Image (cartoon, rainbow, N blue to C red; front, side, top):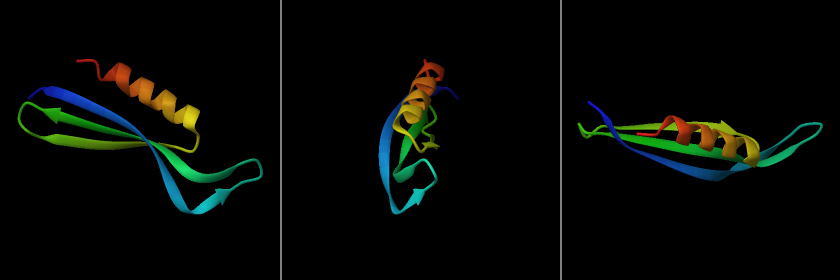
Length: 69
């Protein structure tokens, strides 16, 4: 079985209740959704989670580098 496709989607998911800290006020979670498909017809799904857009962008770049077929 081989991975034939990797799809990476960045999302900003609103939170029902914001999370507040001494230095931050998070109203949404920046998330990277990773879906991989195989030649056997299987699909795997993974969520990479972050509270900041820059960190989510770095996660997406890392996943893209690892997903090179």
